[in-house]
Amino acid sequence: MGELRALEAVDPEVAGLIREEEVRQARTMRLIPSENYVSKAVLEATGTVLTNKYSEGYAGKRYYQGQGVIDRLEQLAIDRAKALFGAEHANVQPYSGSPANLAVYAAFCKPGDRVLGMGLPHGGHLTHGWPVSVTGQFYEAHQYTVRRQDELIDYDEVRRMARELRPAMIIAGATAYPRVIDFEIFAEIAAEVGARLMCDIAHIAGLVVGGVHPSPVPLADAVTTTTHKTLRGPRGGMILCKAAHAGAINKAVFPGLQGGPHNHTTAGLAVALAEASTESFRDYAAQVVSNSRALCEGLLSEGFRLVTGGSDNHLALVDLTPLGVPGKPAAQALERAGIVCNYNTIPYDPRKPFDPSGIRIGTPAITSRGMREGEMALLAGWIGRVVRHIGDPAVEESVRAEVEGLCAGFPAPGLD
Ligand SMILES: *Cc1c(COP(=O)(O)O)cnc(C)c1O
Image (tube, rainbow, N blue to C red; front, side, top):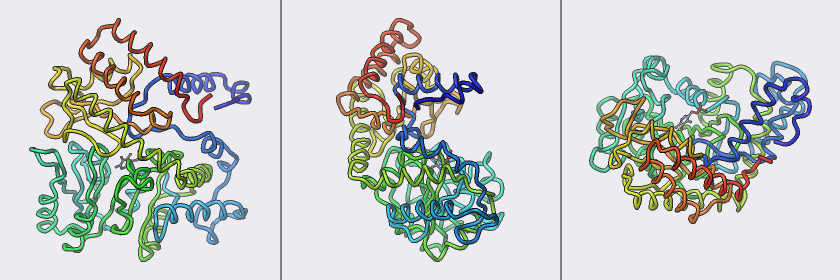
């Protein structure tokens, strides 16, 4: 973070909170698979005077004067996004992943239209039509699931539901699915039933550009993503689409859904996109997956059950049932031991969502610190110890000391 001189003078309370969070991020193993550490360059770009500028509209067609710099900056981010993802069109204005998704609904569907997405308890996102999300209220949302026997997406069910329901849009993508998603099957099904296909790669965008997960960009009508998960940029959203949909997507974002874009975020995104175009980012993405596999092997030998048996992306869903501990107390104990994850439902979970059977873990952030397979073996052992001795302060304390020792040897990007 560096100096916060003005902030410390003007508002020591906020400065103090930021410092505390910085220490927490430095000293803990952050296993939340949607989180990461942005580079110092991305942090610097986002903390700039660009936050002062209004720029509703698009380059060359703005509603305010003074856009000389902003037009060039947004175009730079767009050009980098198109080149990196091989997309015909990019909109970099969505405030985050959820508004990016809503903009695609607005572009492709009328209120009340049928949509087909993955159910939240099976790994889908709220915005894929879950009832508490407006996407489940403004549209007639239907949800496909994973198969009970192997916990993989049931593509036969997707096809059967699509044929029966004839949805206006099918949504592929997930927030808690540890395996590769077959976007080709989704594209076939969408073509067969005349539905638009939206692929949401919020979690896996960095794996896609890093070449370790197949890309939906050539197949989908629109691809949405967050910019801050495996892509390792500032918090934001982005839509990539076919040239034929560029007008509809742009109109849906502005003026359909949003006002002025967050130009300081656009600057951070442009930097992150350049970083993600490098050979070292490809190495990073490959290591994220290798680390996830190594962590899974370690957890299996600690006696945990893994949903689908393992992981071929950046995350795993750990079923704690064999150890007789529910997800929530496990996540709380792990946090006391310096290992931060989130409790999560597992498919067909017999327990309630606020105290489910599993935890969700992922390797994007710890891989950004340079940790590799050897550190994953240590980590799996610590997770096993904490969960087997649930609530034992001495165990939590000793694991915490080991975690802090390891973290000290792997400085996180962007932190001092
Ligand atoms: C995180 C996520 C989103 C939402 O992103 P926000 O930036 O939190 O709004 C959307 N879709 C998927 C699949 C996600 O994992």
